[in-house]
Length: 301
Image (cartoon, rainbow, N blue to C red; front, side, top):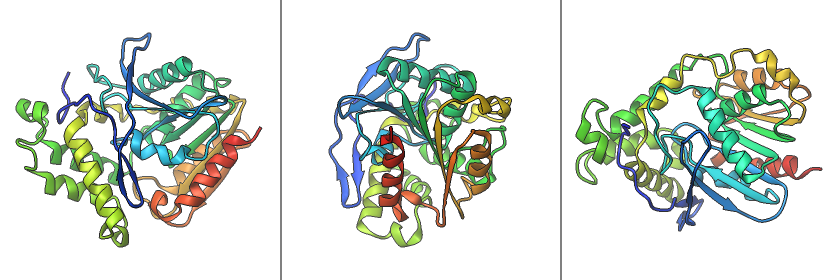
């Protein structure tokens, strides 16, 4: 089991516009297929919504999407992230869909939110079980056909390189030598995902610092790269059988998440609502609207 960077059993931190916040304690849950996944449950009552983050994401980065969602909110770390297991590769989106289904089943979730890679995994689950969720939100979905934008490939390569040489067994165990060594490269890799006008602000610097600490502590599994080029959904026509309601959210100007992908995914789901933001980095540039749009959709009966 090889993981770039160390794995640490501590709670996940949260970050706000004003800086890092202490994170609540998480738990490890056992799944029927043998993969342990890190989970955080917030809120109370029904309905229950499960949240699946994207590649190199985490619970803390996904929590803002559910801040106004009613009922219980269930967040989990994808395999190869946080304290979740890193089973031997190669991996497939069928594996991610099985992880998501296990968390949803154990939690009694009837609604789901997927981000990027998590959205593609959610689509794989919907293709297999079209009646599994009553409402789903797909935020910046990754392509379903196995293709990857060059910017998406480069992003993962930058992060893995900054965390340590995947061929160096010592680096895989401890990150990038001693604490602090190589953090400038990792900070640059993380910071490049933020708009320039935000990168130099106190919230932007706090976000980069928190992400560097989290990635240095928990690491990132190189096996994530094995998810491609196999398609997330082998036959996109299977999504036409989805029986619930879907909201698809994309944005223009995002090289990692082209708006055309969101439009294609929305076209696959019967009656899906589609909204495309006019700027990238939506969590920074349209955070309030994003929260309201997601909560309004999920809280509807």
